[in-house]
Image 1: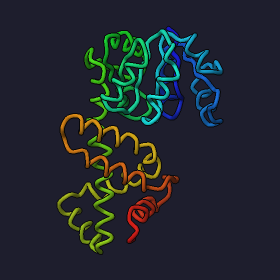
Image 2 (image 1 turned 60 degrees about the horizontal axis):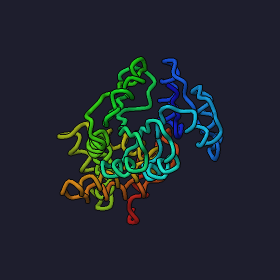
Image 3 (image 1 turned 90 degrees about the vertical axis):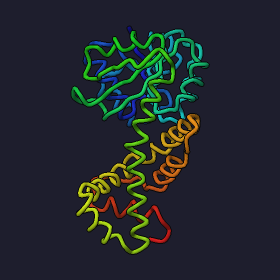
Length: 271
């Protein structure tokens, strides 16, 4: 089967490369995309067909990997596509069901883990009536494809629940250090952490590095998680606040020694 990939960012290009390494034919559309995206696609061995329209005509399966806020619009750009549309974006189950209404044959997906470079690092959760067929495309790749159920939205629910903890608690940890700094007790808090929670000082530094490099991409994801909680009748304020933490975080290089300082300074006007 021929797979169309929309759009090869860091994760998408790595997924495309994994599919190519297993012998799959993977297409992408360069129209309107950046030079950096084109370079990633070239390195991944993807075939450029120029436009999304041509990609849709030549593909049996289209895999969407884009920022959460763009997921619905990307699906809308392929409403005449007759093959299987796989949305593997970090969206709420409700957003996944909206996309179901835009395309004919739909499989819901959610990726957990880092961009795949070696086996055992990346899981693709899938749900929908044709999820097993899509999982088969990844059978000989370094990506573990896991079918959750036949219910669209179930794979997205897995992603939302997982990221609610990992990225949500990272945002909370940064907020805790920021408020401790404003109150002038940051060093006392660090001393207490080293006694009772020895993993937290370094974990907060790692959270700052992630916020610098990727936080701007997680704002939409935190809002999708908040929508998931609200739809379940649970408080959504946790992740609305996490979205604000990532919104305030600067976007900068992560290899500098002052990553934590940059983030904490940006989180509060009192620092």
